[in-house]
Image (cartoon, rainbow, N blue to C red; front, side, top):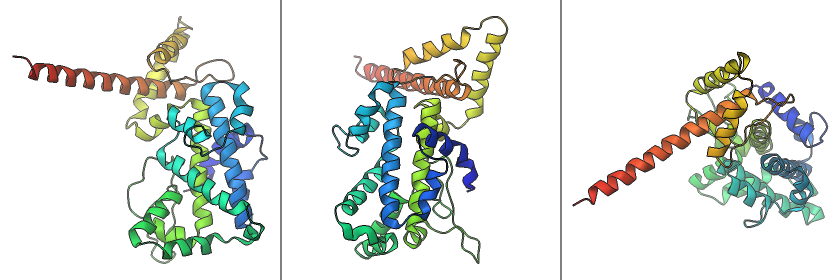
Length: 294
């Protein structure tokens, strides 16, 4: 994958988190100890920003910043899970990173920590299948050979054999260059957070699950077209109706106060899925009732 595809998304996130431009990619040049500490701090800040943006409550920024990230009942990730903001793979990665970070910060001797040595030791403790699971947890942002991509990253990085040109397996690549693979997965999370901040929490399902995004983009364009020929409030009326039907859905506005096209299209898809689920539930209830009729 070309890293340029993430440039806009990462740059937007860096601005949102008041970080210098290029901060995310510059982490690769840090020592392994500093890399883990700074990457954890970056993700923790990004998750706080995600919660503030998703709830639309900027006054809660300091509150979220002070919350422990991994507390399963009251930490940042507890809010992320309750609001269904990120995929399970993202949450598990952040949790694992937090655990590793906590191991490193309490002893000064850990400044010489080496990621390759650490994960080589972890690999020796595990069976082949468990080692693959460990690589999957840390390396979900990396394409796993010829296997289909999981719906957890907009773009998957890939590594090819220098001689044959075939795609390398995820576990082989991870245990060989864990630092780079971890950064790849972290950037997939940061990209997701940036997209959600910009377009709303519903955008991720739209991007990852919708098989015909063009259809819903076209519907959103038709809504804006109608606004141009005599009904300027039409997009806002659709926005309000969608948000009434989906309590956790929020169509985002651009700098001019207009609904963002992609956000509106994603919301139309969310409504489509909600109606399909409702119709399925109704049919199941009717079938059950029919079966119990005398």
